[in-house]
Length: 219
Length: 417
Image 1 (cartoon, one colour):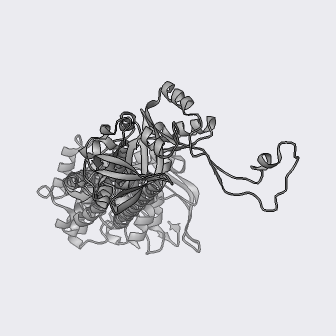
Image 2 (tube, each protein chain N blue to C red):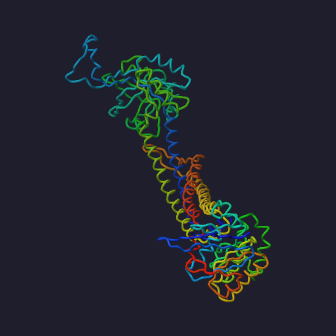
Image 3 (cartoon, rainbow over the protein chains, first blue to last red):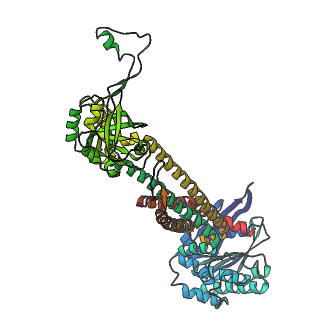
């Protein structure tokens, strides 16, 4: 079981410009991969293509042996719901929902809101928000918001976690806390993690680093 | 999804409220305006239908055509006649040719409730120096009172006192005032070049309409005598069991007889064109209100969709499908529409009930006043509900679909860079 990309090209924008060129890579179960590179190197685009949010212009991506390009919308949304967690630079919390409700949003999609509730509470406790379950996002600090977002990405116990500069908008203390959570998740749940970051310290803590420059992998 | 939709609505209280208000006003306006117009129309129709006969059989009237007179002048052996000045004018028979066959037909027709043969003439009524030229109708009182409600509008005396002859007359209130005559007094009636004949006033009626209060009614035999036309009649008024059949009955009868046959609705056709105009106006007003309300929903939802793009992105990223997103926004529009429609209908109903307690002057020319007649029928309310809800579904569908077409990657990429 793995994520496999074969000869992936990605062309974006108008006039079209090539963002990724002939990328082939494999992320095995339980791996912790850091995608690094300067801004504009295509690392975020690669993350989205690998994670099924975006589609390659050429080549293919398969998750657990299923070609992402050939999945129906229903299959794709189920895959994202059950197998994949996302953390972005921005927290993307829904302003009208409390911290706990936000964390439970993926569970609600698949009717597991009740069964996952305890787990969601324990996740929020682990990220230090055990007393702020019913706070709205605007009543939380930036670091706390991002920790809620991480709890949300983990509530379905996904096999894959994609994180796009999750520490980018945080100070070093909060950034460190987020990083620790990712490492714990990778260790305890054997969740595969793909992390985009431009901070060398964090990249160095991954088990494997993939460096991109001008849309190509530099080994 | 429903709870999230509700939270969205609650978090924008003022916007939601104003949108609701739009639909609310539309529905309430529709109910009130329709109730007012439909009630008024129904009241007028009731008045027409109850107070008059439904089908009027009148003596034959033909317009002369180029060859109408050929035979009379030249016999049938002339091949073709060229007129230097072609004949024109109207050929009047001034009587119904064979009333007995009409009576037979009317007696055997199951749709007919009652009929009343009449002789209507133009007459001059005078009392000492006061005089008035009026329409004088000769009728058989028992039959006449079955086809219209004149008898019930008698304010002094009695309609049946006309009897079957004996120079007795019933006059309208206006006419009575013009002539300065009172019950049991005599007036002189002159028809054409005949000699004035004294008639005794045995009844005075007040219909509420100034024009019809300027008429007079006498016994059929008396009027025929005045006109030197024994046994002649020129109109038969027919009351049907179901007034809605009047048009059809009139068409049928005109096919089988030369007489001029009119139904009550063609006789009052100008009134019906006013009704149609009112109905059109009603739809235009309500259409505009609904359009504005619909645009309100459209705008608010479009704004919400734009503000909530990030929510749409994350919902899709965590496994919600396009149809869930569509539902999320559609539900908001629908909720606004349904609650606006229901509250609007309720308030509209209350306004209608209030309007019913008010009094108004009757239709133009009338001399009585009445309560406002407001229709409260189910049709109006279901129409208002359907219209309001349809408008809100339509208005919320476009923004909702736009939201469901968003792909998460575009939003996330746009947000990051």
